[in-house]
Length: 74
Length: 380
Image (cartoon, rainbow over all chains, first blue to last red; front, side, top):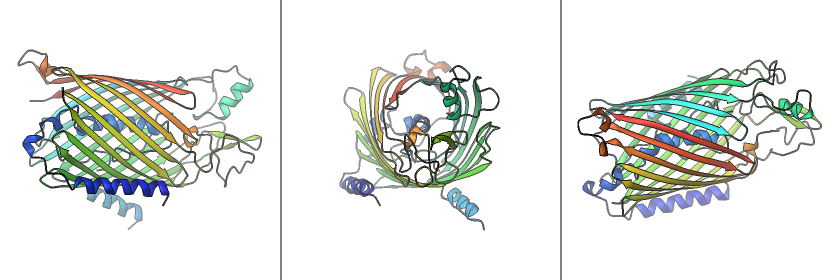
């Protein structure tokens, strides 16, 4: 495993542990989080389209939680 | 049972890559929504892609949902523009990443059609994806399972997919690559967390194991003073970890940060940083600014000049995507929810319109523009 990957996984682990220390947010406190300019879901389709474009121009993939084949881009 | 079939069933049973994981903060009751968009991509090589797509989401009984996605793309690759017989024309023809059969001085146009369907029930989902073009057929089955924790402020999702691609190169005057196959096994684990009434965080790790033809069957590479077909390894292990932070701001605005680290066993390592700033201009109308920075290292076998026809370790590529690269993207968009503007009791109130503009450029003197516009309609 490369040094960079180990560092990334360690950072991810620390972030997960940090999250466990928060006080749970109640359902009635989440109004701002479902706003389209804040929620993850509102941009999910757009992010998937962009990943496809970047995959055709760059050497990496990922970041949106999925994979898909085919490329008519070039 | 064949390994491929076993993995396919395993992936389908787990439940969806290709779709975002369930979100701890999402509302349970969502209307039926249909949307359509058109997208134009044009770049500095005069390649253009026009996309027309539509999406449907049907909420069903007992907390289940069905979604459908269709996309049609028309790709235009211009004819070789150098004078026939000139060295520039010969160079362009031998390194073209399109089939050259007969007249290389004619435009090349092809269509791609893509369909994806997903069924989600409770905490599990399964999906199927197919993409078809004249020389490429890609299919994929996927699945996802997720679970909420800590009074629904934390969601953990596991997804997997199995993809199999059939590659049938078109008739070509130069390369002799025959029919080939590529498979992709994908795994991901993603956690989404409601950290505070104004802060969402998502972390994820992904792994892809790719087997089969992964180079362009139409492209030749200069090596040892002659042209030889491009050749890359048949196996590639790709992995990445990402972090996304969405923060709601006062004054009806939000800021989003994202970071992704990627690494593979071909030697490509990349970092991606992104940020988006959104602001409501007035009720129902929001504007967004976006910036993305990306950098990557080269694959072990990439070189801008090969001394021998055997390349490096037997591999050679003319694909700039496998070389050192840095890129920037700037974007802006407007989104209007017409419920805030249209008269009451009219169907127009159920529509959301948006318009996006993006400018992309990278360190290979390459640039592209993307224009996208679309509409979503919420059914009663």
